[in-house]
Length: 282
Image (tube, rainbow, N blue to C red; front, top):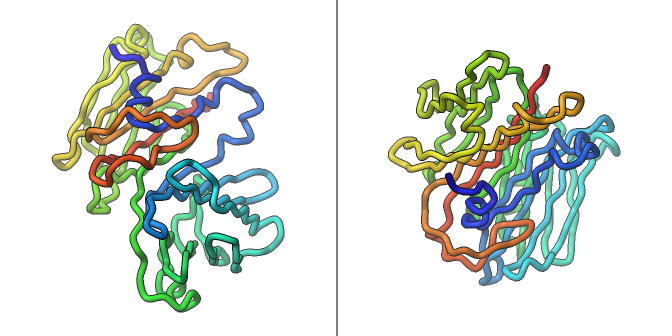
């Protein structure tokens, strides 16, 4: 069985395990999305972080160049300062947003009724949300350059079922992803389902609390790595989380970055990586 950390290193994505600190309970309600795009002839990363706290929603947008140098960073707190729509001119980019009609589920990431656009030199390099017509009209643009969604970190909660949505290929198709595990039984089993179909089943999970397998989703190979040690051997007073990584099996260089995906890779070498932190509600 391969080491979980080394496997994630090979994919060039690192996300700190939040179970290492009690203080991170605040950061559980967050979703981090990383997009690759081309800005002024160079490859850059745009990181969008959606966070939900007791004070409301916060959206942080950061743009970094190929050397991981920050080009700009903006924090939007629409529910705290009632700035549910607006515009901000930064040194390297312009950011437009409209969250006034945003619809939410259990995740901090809106389901619809919004847009967030990032422009560089009056070109839309990233456009999120379903209100594209409104975004193009507001920014006086006609199209988006099409940033590539390459990585996501998400926290999910449940007693035995943990659900999210994921895209594993460039066709944009979204799949229903469900991880099921009942740790209260004597011989727990881990099940991974995609679009209602069981694609992976790990029996004797108490002894196989770490491992990796490969599943196929619409002819795309997806490597699944799991670490649920905390579910069985964590401190009862402070239950930990299971960690799952889903990544498309494409060749990538062994370039390592402590916070993000390296940008020195060729476009065709990028796959998609989803980090899922599964917290059990007792």
